[in-house]
Length: 404
Image (spheres, rainbow, N blue to C red):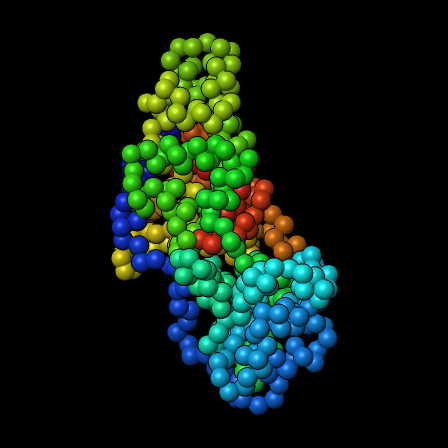
């Protein structure tokens, strides 16, 4: 059996990528060239608004409990950008009233408040670009280890603005010590890395096994597992679910067996049996087919990447939420481009219902069975989107994408 993956992709090496990272970490500086205009001290502060506007009473309770009201009330020190969920936003997120804030663990309340605050700047929506995928803002939330500042990711499409995947309902409330953007829902700070989310998902056991197979013989950040566990990164991982991998493996194994002279009915039964467990990736009978290089070539097409100028290499440094993908089919590059720079990437399309993405699709260059026109295969649907981690975002999809 031979997967239809080009040799350059099958032999893709992440060693160069890993060794040459200029990490797009959780404490990366905000990449804006235009100076940020801050309000003249005068009028109400953020703290004044929280004290007087009862529609923010739950947020005020959280800010007070976190001990941050004095700082947000000071008009003469640091400027802030505050993403401010009102009471309706808290209730939408499952926090009904101020009393709930009072019984939550203090550390959780502090983290929640800090994740909504960016210190040192007042960022108006006019400085948030509409380019893919977003910008990165380091918040006031610092992880205890490895001492990384967690970021939020504002983006715009036309006049609409989001932070991560949450819509902004009322932007640009200019105040004496900063800017407030009212949110539709609460921003929940991520606490797990991608590996913890993916490996614990009972519907991603094949993806987990595929990562282990691809990493065979690799060390350090040349291992996909290491990337998934490394907190400073910003990645987007398209993770095919178990049903997607079963269908992909079943088809390829059956075709290989038929090519070896096995009768079609027998080949179909044997292929289904072999593909019925994640252990297929370490089955000795398939060792020459599911080689680490082959599996890595497939998986590399599911890690989004962008071209960096210093060093000049494609790196997995794209954190794209569902709202960041184009509404007309557009292409995003992947780790495959680190081996084949001219590869067109993955075709992506988001469909909105109101301010939320109701459908997210990805189409690979190749088809199964092979031989179809480019990007003519059935699109993969995101069955779970915007699963946010410390080091990136993952979208679960229902088909395996093929780079050729």
